[in-house]
Length: 251
Image (cartoon, rainbow, N blue to C red; front, side):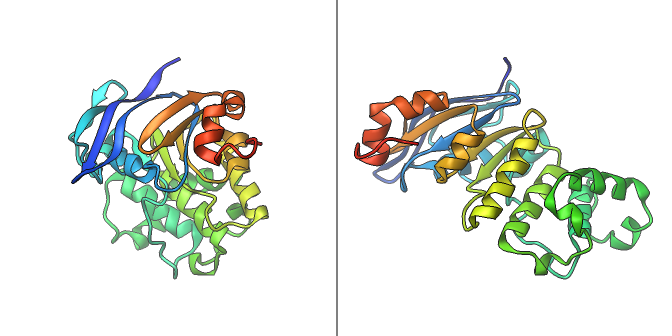
């Protein structure tokens, strides 16, 4: 199996605080790899280092064998590192299809002053329809983004990130704020992408993590204490003690 993203001894210090403590991760191509841990464990700090928003104090990050540790966030996107909700501001007065069309244009290297031209370019719209296919949003692609539910907006943000054709996608709590039905729809959408794009999933919803993850790494106080399968994580006393206080099983 090919390791797509290699993280080695990643350290991030903020003054006297060790926020990331020699983190090592291997994200295998085609897999969904989950990163879990209690609040304050350092998950967001790791994601921000991976996408280039924070520079590590030491350690290395390699994407498809290339050292990207010192590259800017924009250069990492060009290399194929995407992040959900990277396009954080939807254009509320535009339709679902139009928002995705703009993301496709970003991938092609054009600026945003293209909407009139986009409407005359069949190839763009074919790409948009391919991205929409199979999602709940395909049922009403002309709906304005501003009229979507919170779950619909998150699905649209995910589809816009996919429009950039990332090699690996960093998913930062895609279930946050969703109801049970919307969470199930998001799980179904992500499962449908399995094998098409490699994913690193940061998520508190353990039902979603166990439904999606091929591998799981558990982060506590900035350090990975265990990486393994769903069964490994459920069976680990160290994980129960650190993540749940040892009071109950993970299920």
